[in-house]
Length: 157
Image 1 (tube, one colour):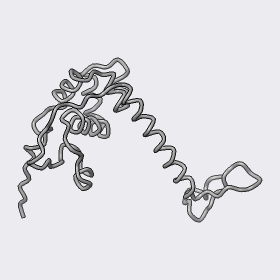
Image 2 (image 1 turned 30 degrees about the vertical axis):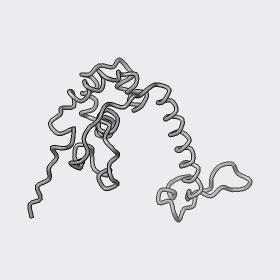
Image 3 (image 1 turned 45 degrees about the vertical axis):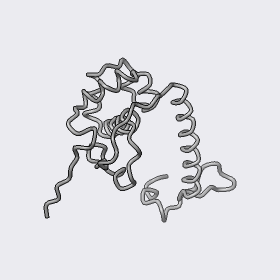
Image 4 (image 1 turned 135 degrees about the vertical axis):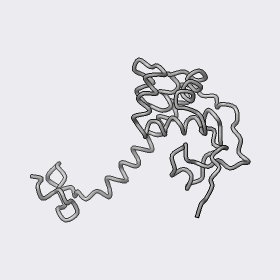
């Protein structure tokens, strides 16, 4: 069965990583990119060439930048849950969705977003801690190891 998928509506179709990065750097600058994406290649001696070199080697960072391009710079509506699971270049954008004007971003908004993410991460960490296989002992400040649920606990001392 041959399913022909039309990716031509995806704004990333036919756009090189260098071209994509040049567009968003010219519009937002490296400072905004670092504030929103928190990728060090936009902070430490940033240049388009060095950032492209890093992003080509690092899948998670490239996907983060491509998603930023789609949803902030091209201002597309968020992808569906099943499309969100795919890398940005493989996502199918419905034909009724067209790119809009780039979103207006500021360093203040980036700071608020960073604080919101930090709170969410702290709540997630607290929830994950309550499901931990380690049991706290009353008289000892170190966590006790539940050797039945931790396969590596047998060699830990």
